[in-house]
Image (cartoon, rainbow, N blue to C red; front, side, top):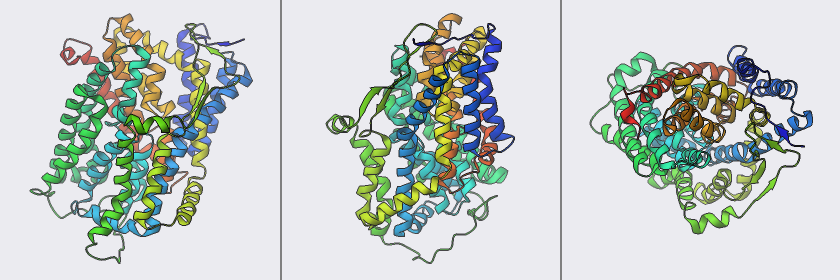
Length: 539
């Protein structure tokens, strides 16, 4: 017999919502208050969700465990395979000696580490988010900042905060495409609406990066760089989201980087240039016995892997190349998961092993193509890949556990309960709508995953309260990006990338406040957009 989800198992929607919310509270408390390592916090929270799924929701125990296994299996291709290969490419630059060349090249952007952080973490990170998505911007940009001398924990903090505004259009607009699929409404409308939300956020993020990097001094001395980088990104993202939302981040990333480089021709931050050694928590001067000026050929070799990444991910958008890759893999019904939603619809439990078109596979291809440019032999490349996997250690368990948690909560009906409870608040739901997306990304680690979970609920709730379904659907995506920085999967990716596995709780405490502050701003914006005050912004 199939398992029938129940949105209100306790008979009281409030009590049911509190039960469904308990795993999330436990996860946040263990990470933020008790500073547990992400893998133990993930395993403990998974246990709590299993108990609630079986005890409160009546899910058969074996099916509940099976749902967790299904979720863990999903993480292998979506996160682990992707991150292994992203960090492997970086580790090969270290192995080949191009690490120092890369650092000196980025230093040529300007002498000030604060502006370099905006260019790398915000602009270049947005380009990676557009093309690859997943944890690749955090993994790659964090190690680039380390190459400039930023301490590992600060590098991870900066890249996680920067990976916000681009997320709604990441993976060539995949989150927006998912919204269109699950709601049956035009994806282009969602793209335009999301652009009218996250583009405003993009203006703020570079200022946050300055403050995190160098406190009030950073804001006082380098604010023109943040203003130019943020405004140029926002304008380009807004315009592109209106026309072709799939290209919003690519256009915005290129425009903002170009605007900053042009600005640096006529302006420099006030005072002496601030190096990584000078900013609070900086990593100190990086000893470098290399030449003062590298040959152009060596600089090109150092950047070759990242140019190749951009080319590979751009080329596979062509149908003639995408189709053969998409054919490499398989899709099958996961055994033992026969689930019906609370509305009577069959829950999709197919497992898609799309190995050929997976982001991690494309990164692997990029790495293999980079071998001759970095002068790394295939044997050495394989050895570096093995060391990269060992580098992750316990982070692997953290990612597996949190993905298992997300699917137990989803398949048991706990996610549906939370969404139904919030949607029952009437017109005030417009304010809470981004919070639903925030919860979704906290659980799934992806904006597309959150939209798949809650996109239909948002459009349904909009009809119930008389709001525009496009507004609330986009709000789910815009609110969700604020949770990208604190999702346990990305925390694990960030700490693994910078060699600080086990410090996820410390990293969480550094960025949780920023996540809430930016989420509050989005909530206020969406609420005003649901009223005559800013209703003119809804397309």
